[in-house]
Image 1: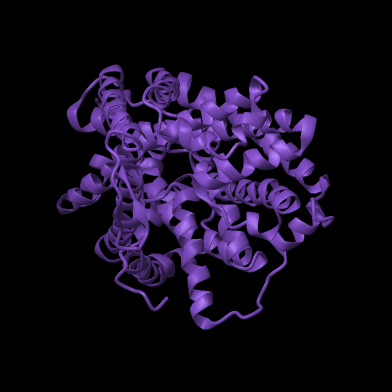
Image 2: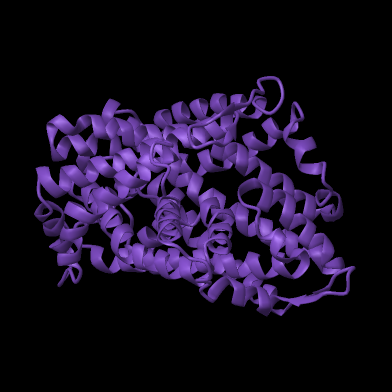
Length: 467
């Protein structure tokens, strides 16, 4: 594909909504509330916010600026910055290639639960065997994975303006309205359990936002710090090639400083509201022990029980909740697929239709294998971090715990020490009057971020066990 024919976002609003849509995904909804509940509530929130404005800001700025400067996708952009660093582009492109198949499978799970609550089947979805029975069945998970994948592929086939930008302008406002609405509802609910214990949403909210420093040690503090830093990868979509791809579609006269600030605010607000949606509701109906769930067990086991306990209104709230989750999953999956499609277009000079078709087939085959990992291809191994895993968990571990920190470390070395931060600073200032956090950016990219990332990588690989 020739650079002069490269598509671009029509304006900054389209770019911000698309980038924020990428950032607001399943990681924000099913991982952020769990970590906040586990890591001292407000303590986690404060550390996360500080990291988002420093560590996350530096990586987000770097990737978007690399994309706009090179007008290339992740596979080829790093080579444009420094020829000998092409390998980093390969690693960055591998991340979305690995993520897309299993993200499509989880997207199919969301479709299943949305349809269940939409058709009044919320009570059945809350039963203990429902989720396990569904994911271990032969056909239904594959069919629903196909439904989700083809919706994403359709948006990508339509291109940057008619597909990604147009869908983001519709989905993101709808998602935000649902998030705010469900969060407000969650704060107003009350429930008395069978033992006569009365709880309400505001009590759960205080558990979420008030820092719990009781028994906090230095080791515990570093554990919270690394949890928050790991969450930032999910929340801001960095080290996945996505922001480089989206940055390559940003016009040279766009104000990157303003856009990056808006993405940070949007993402952090939705991550916070995800906790407001989930923690008060789970606490009200399941107590503190219910707040220990995360990931699929939170989304597809604990929350359906909460909705069922709400009585008549539970089906409606559950339907709205899974509609919101579906919107979040779609916008994230679109960005994941676009990172791969744009890479194929730039590296092999393919048309968008052909590149999107190739990636759809790759995701389809991988998705089927992931689905079969719960029945015909099931096995159980222990990962270096001690977790039991099968196919989906292994793919998630390789992409999130190994490749993403590795890509981020490589990016810090390339920009912080090889080319020097001025390359990015000049690009950011191209369409902006002032780069307010310039000094912070240099310090983060050269010193602080690489050290934190190495610690995170060693901990993810099970090498560093003292933290």
